Image 1 (spheres, one colour):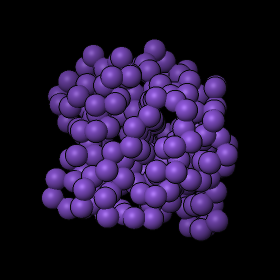
Image 2: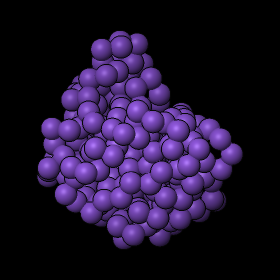
Image 3: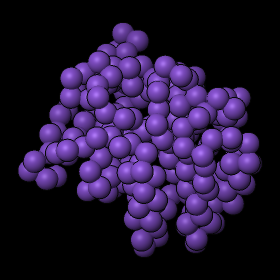
Length: 214
């Protein structure tokens, strides 16, 4: 972390629970990227943290937080409750808009796996006022019912060897009517764990967010 960054471990009050997160704001950041992790993951996800580090290097603030409490995360049904995850994401966005250090910043969502469905569903809600969405290996088909309501520029990033998810993303891309792109990381699987693959994801995400969170 840069010595000039503001780093805050925070608790976000939502639905009568406290969601733990880490908010990092580089100096001069105009945009903020909120991460929605996949089911079974958390704010400690090494992949999302690696992407977040690249975004901060590009002058963007980041929030990585837990969509569920530890107790909730032990329940498989809750892990895959996309409606609940979306509600939590949108409520957290509203909370950010009422904090002095984040209220004036443009906000984007970065979603991975099932978290990408929550990100798209959240972006479809007008009260969230989201300016850009990036999905990494996302189950964006789980947001199918609201695709017509997504107006924020959206980038879908998929591994070239992640065949089933790649096809799902292609189908969603065809249905989106917003500014959109689908980026294939050749040779990558669902986890983007090959050499340089996650770096490519981070650069593609940073390019979109830097353009639209100004």
